[in-house]
Length: 158
Image (cartoon, rainbow, N blue to C red):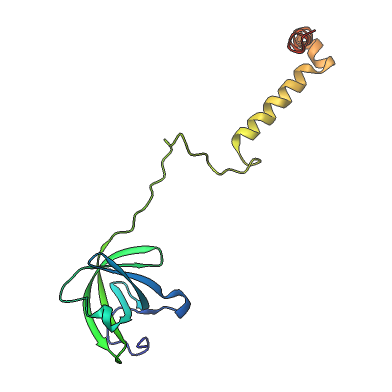
Protein backbone atom coordinates (compact mmCIF):
# COMPACT_ATOMS: atom_id res chain seq x y z
CA UNK A 1 0.00 0.00 0.00
CA UNK A 2 2.87 2.39 -0.52
CA UNK A 3 4.71 1.91 2.78
CA UNK A 4 7.85 0.58 1.10
CA UNK A 5 7.88 3.08 -1.78
CA UNK A 6 7.94 6.25 0.29
CA UNK A 7 9.21 9.31 -1.55
CA UNK A 8 8.57 11.54 1.47
CA UNK A 9 11.19 12.45 4.03
CA UNK A 10 9.14 11.60 7.12
CA UNK A 11 8.68 8.03 8.32
CA UNK A 12 5.31 6.46 7.56
CA UNK A 13 3.87 3.74 9.79
CA UNK A 14 1.43 1.27 8.21
CA UNK A 15 -1.70 0.45 10.20
CA UNK A 16 -2.97 -3.14 10.46
CA UNK A 17 -6.40 -3.70 8.93
CA UNK A 18 -8.01 -4.64 12.27
CA UNK A 19 -6.86 -1.34 13.83
CA UNK A 20 -7.52 0.94 10.87
CA UNK A 21 -11.13 1.95 11.53
CA UNK A 22 -11.64 5.67 11.86
CA UNK A 23 -14.33 8.32 11.47
CA UNK A 24 -14.05 11.27 9.13
CA UNK A 25 -16.27 14.25 9.86
CA UNK A 26 -17.00 16.43 6.84
CA UNK A 27 -19.35 19.42 7.14
CA UNK A 28 -21.03 18.02 10.25
CA UNK A 29 -21.56 14.46 8.93
CA UNK A 30 -19.53 11.44 9.99
CA UNK A 31 -18.28 8.82 7.54
CA UNK A 32 -16.38 5.58 8.04
CA UNK A 33 -12.76 5.71 6.92
CA UNK A 34 -9.86 3.29 6.76
CA UNK A 35 -6.56 4.79 7.94
CA UNK A 36 -3.78 3.22 5.85
CA UNK A 37 -0.75 4.84 7.45
CA UNK A 38 0.34 7.66 9.73
CA UNK A 39 3.33 9.95 9.92
CA UNK A 40 4.50 12.79 12.11
CA UNK A 41 2.61 15.29 9.96
CA UNK A 42 -0.48 13.46 8.77
CA UNK A 43 -2.49 10.45 7.68
CA UNK A 44 -3.33 8.54 4.53
CA UNK A 45 -7.02 7.55 4.55
CA UNK A 46 -9.07 5.38 2.18
CA UNK A 47 -12.71 6.39 1.71
CA UNK A 48 -15.41 5.54 -0.84
CA UNK A 49 -15.51 7.81 -3.88
CA UNK A 50 -18.87 9.22 -2.79
CA UNK A 51 -17.26 10.48 0.44
CA UNK A 52 -14.12 11.70 -1.35
CA UNK A 53 -16.26 13.96 -3.56
CA UNK A 54 -17.42 15.80 -0.43
CA UNK A 55 -13.84 16.75 0.44
CA UNK A 56 -13.27 19.70 -1.87
CA UNK A 57 -10.51 22.27 -1.92
CA UNK A 58 -9.11 23.36 1.43
CA UNK A 59 -12.17 22.21 3.37
CA UNK A 60 -11.23 21.35 6.94
CA UNK A 61 -12.23 17.88 8.14
CA UNK A 62 -12.02 16.17 11.52
CA UNK A 63 -10.49 12.69 11.80
CA UNK A 64 -11.23 10.46 14.81
CA UNK A 65 -8.69 7.66 15.00
CA UNK A 66 -7.09 5.64 17.82
CA UNK A 67 -8.59 7.77 20.59
CA UNK A 68 -7.35 11.01 19.06
CA UNK A 69 -9.23 13.73 17.25
CA UNK A 70 -7.47 15.92 14.68
CA UNK A 71 -8.48 18.74 12.40
CA UNK A 72 -6.98 17.82 9.02
CA UNK A 73 -6.61 19.35 5.54
CA UNK A 74 -6.30 17.58 2.21
CA UNK A 75 -2.72 17.35 0.99
CA UNK A 76 -3.00 14.80 -1.83
CA UNK A 77 -5.47 12.50 -3.58
CA UNK A 78 -5.14 9.20 -5.41
CA UNK A 79 -8.01 7.25 -6.99
CA UNK A 80 -6.96 3.64 -7.58
CA UNK A 81 -10.27 2.23 -8.81
CA UNK A 82 -13.91 3.18 -9.25
CA UNK A 83 -14.82 2.50 -5.62
CA UNK A 84 -12.21 4.01 -3.30
CA UNK A 85 -9.99 7.07 -3.09
CA UNK A 86 -6.85 7.45 -0.99
CA UNK A 87 -6.59 10.92 0.54
CA UNK A 88 -3.47 12.31 2.18
CA UNK A 89 -4.31 14.56 5.11
CA UNK A 90 -2.10 17.02 6.97
CA UNK A 91 -2.68 17.56 10.68
CA UNK A 92 -3.54 21.18 11.41
CA UNK A 93 -4.93 21.20 14.94
CA UNK A 94 -5.37 18.65 17.72
CA UNK A 95 -8.90 18.52 19.10
CA UNK A 96 -8.46 15.66 21.58
CA UNK A 97 -9.86 16.60 24.98
CA UNK A 98 -7.67 15.69 27.89
CA UNK A 99 -8.84 15.42 31.48
CA UNK A 100 -6.50 17.17 33.84
CA UNK A 101 -6.16 15.34 37.16
CA UNK A 102 -6.83 17.48 40.20
CA UNK A 103 -6.49 16.97 43.92
CA UNK A 104 -9.44 19.25 44.68
CA UNK A 105 -12.10 16.77 43.62
CA UNK A 106 -14.29 16.06 46.64
CA UNK A 107 -16.78 13.75 44.96
CA UNK A 108 -14.38 11.29 43.36
CA UNK A 109 -12.98 8.48 45.43
CA UNK A 110 -9.51 7.32 44.52
CA UNK A 111 -9.09 3.74 43.44
CA UNK A 112 -6.64 2.66 46.12
CA UNK A 113 -5.97 -0.85 47.29
CA UNK A 114 -7.13 -1.36 50.87
CA UNK A 115 -3.76 -2.68 52.03
CA UNK A 116 -1.61 -0.08 50.27
CA UNK A 117 -3.61 2.91 51.49
CA UNK A 118 -1.80 5.11 54.06
CA UNK A 119 -5.02 5.25 56.10
CA UNK A 120 -4.79 1.49 56.61
CA UNK A 121 -1.28 1.92 58.04
CA UNK A 122 -2.61 4.59 60.38
CA UNK A 123 -5.38 2.24 61.49
CA UNK A 124 -2.83 -0.50 62.24
CA UNK A 125 -0.66 1.88 64.30
CA UNK A 126 -3.70 3.11 66.24
CA UNK A 127 -4.87 -0.47 66.90
CA UNK A 128 -1.39 -1.44 68.11
CA UNK A 129 -1.17 1.54 70.48
CA UNK A 130 -4.65 0.82 71.84
CA UNK A 131 -3.71 -2.82 72.44
CA UNK A 132 -0.50 -1.79 74.24
CA UNK A 133 -2.33 0.66 76.48
CA UNK A 134 -5.02 -1.91 77.31
CA UNK A 135 -2.67 -4.79 78.20
CA UNK A 136 -2.84 -5.56 81.94
CA UNK A 137 0.89 -5.26 82.73
CA UNK A 138 1.66 -2.21 80.59
CA UNK A 139 -1.66 -0.50 81.28
CA UNK A 140 -1.14 -0.85 85.05
CA UNK A 141 2.40 0.52 84.92
CA UNK A 142 1.29 3.47 82.75
CA UNK A 143 -1.76 4.08 84.90
CA UNK A 144 -4.16 3.82 81.98
CA UNK A 145 -5.81 0.48 82.83
CA UNK A 146 -8.47 1.89 85.22
CA UNK A 147 -9.37 4.68 82.77
CA UNK A 148 -9.62 2.25 79.85
CA UNK A 149 -11.80 -0.10 81.95
CA UNK A 150 -14.19 2.69 82.91
CA UNK A 151 -14.35 3.91 79.29
CA UNK A 152 -15.18 0.42 78.03
CA UNK A 153 -17.79 -0.11 80.78
CA UNK A 154 -19.45 3.24 80.03
CA UNK A 155 -19.44 2.42 76.33
CA UNK A 156 -20.95 -1.04 76.92
CA UNK A 157 -23.60 0.40 79.21
CA UNK A 158 -22.73 -1.34 82.52
